[in-house]
Amino acid sequence: MTPRCEWHTDDAGSGRLMLSGNWTIAQTLPDVIAALPAALPASIPLDCNALEHWDSTLASQVLRLHQHCSAAGSSLQLNDAPEGLQRLLALATAVKAQTTLNEGVMSFGDTLRSLIKKPGDRCREFLQFFGDTLFALWQWVRGRSVIRDGDIAFWFEQAGVRAIPIVTLVSLLVGLILAFLGAVQLRQFGAQVYVANLVSIGMAREMGALMIAIIMSGRTGAAYAAQLGAMQANDEIDSLRTMGISPMELLVLPRMLAALMALPLLTIYADVVGMIGGSLIAITMDISPLQYLHQTRISIGMSAILIGLGKSVVFAFLIALAGCRYGLNAGRSSTAVGQATTEAVVSALVSVIVADSIINILLDRLGIGV
Amino acid sequence: MSTPPIRIEQLTMAYGDRVIQRDINVDINQGDIFIIMGGSGCGKSTLLKHLIGLNTPAKGRILYDGEDYFSASEERKQITRKRWGILFQSGGLFSAMTLAENIALPLSQYTDLSASAIADLVHYKLSLVGLGGFEEYYPAEISGGMQKRAGLARAMALDPDILFFDEPSAGLDPISARRLDELILELRDTLGCTVVIVTHELASIFAIGNNSVFLDAETRTMIAQGNPRELRDHSPNDTVRLFLHRGEDTTPTGEIA
Image (cartoon, rainbow over all chains, first blue to last red; front, side):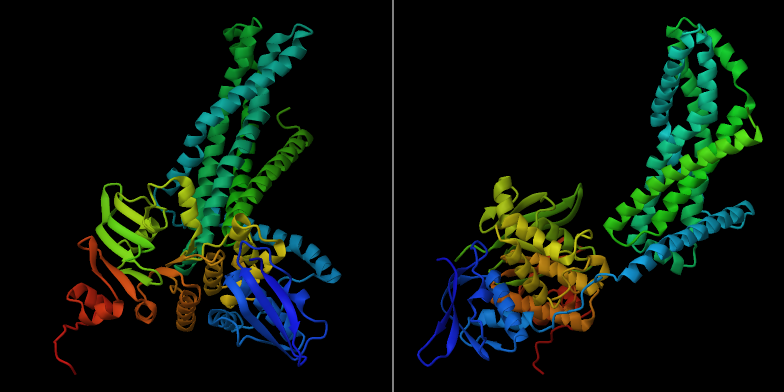
């Protein structure tokens, strides 16, 4: 039977709320509040004699009635209700519902304050982390820090050796693309052979380091943030701190050093692979491999390679910094870990590109490597 | 005799070649508060994972209302699963959702209730566990004990026939633990559900358990079953008696004090 909720007034003028039918999760429920009379009497008896099956849906509606009635200053009488329902309601009302809302609407002033304060806080927190990292590196250089044996090697393998397949593929293709781009333009005035210059200088000075940095932001930066974030959620960071071991030394330093070693090496590798990729295109344009090699040798100078390597060291530092910083400052839930990873990758990519532009502008102004 | 809601037949549990427990035979009856107990590492939680279908038995069967769960079709499994409510050790709440959204998830998945009816039910379930008014909080914003109670509210969302608890009172203060025990008893009495609890909290075991199985880590099988209070006083097995007396030697003398 469909659930019904009606208000009955008997001859003596006293009313009662009558519930009938099946009050179960499969039914469409009537509005219990609407059934009440406009002027609530002091006591409202609940008549459940015609009630058939019921489950939590009934209990939830009775709780709603109860709260509505007590807010209006009258009381719901449950003496005739099934015993189970009475007990469930007693249980549900045993602890008074908390009324203060969570994170209520912020006033205009508060919003403004948090807008100004948040970037300020973040900036200070970033500078602190930056300083801590530099200090930890300095301590390591002076041989005063404890890094577990094999940690650096482990992270170097993770960040460096295991990245080789993807680095090979990407740099080969980047070399190809550079060569294609140049070939179309240079062919117009018969200077195809300069494709070798374009590819070698392009890879060594710019694209090698940049492509590796982009790969590493996604691969290593994200991994660092996710690992450290999960460790934070798992109380592992707290237990390290209470043991008096600095997470900076045990967790950040090996990852940072591994990245600082892996990135330059991968960059050199990427340069070579990129030039091979370029040569594949050159061969299709009737430039012999020997010619290409010779042209590469005379075009590329030590300065281009060193600039590329220098950039890769800076990028490595930025990527590891972003990954570790967002990981260590992550919240303590699975959502927070995801958020930390996203922020780490985004901030690593942005900082790499910004740093690259700044370095290029500086090199140009100072006239280095032109 | 009617078929028990849960029957475990000749169950052997193993991770690969490592056998955790073998030859478990237990009937869990309607309305039981059934305790799975045993020392650390004996396979209590593993047994629970088998019961809720997360692990597959190496041998043997688990019957729900006489039907083998693991050989049933996916649709039948789904129907059986909808009758369960499970409270995981740390609550298992989805951290990206508010408490209200957590509890509303099974309701909106499996019923055709209107949004307002769901909101009423959510408020009621939270009130049952003493968390009325915390609807808009995220799990990370409340304490561990509150998370556990919110997990219970979610486990009860669909009025389950069988409630599973993994270490419900671990990490709770004695008063909260006791309140939770009372809540479990009250729910059993009012909703008529069957409750399966993994715990080694002796106070809880004696306060609410009326049936149990004792898993032994050494012999890798069950060595006792029945009402835990009776096992404490009359079990012929020393391991079981020692466990239920917190390690104090209490050889039954047969004398009446």
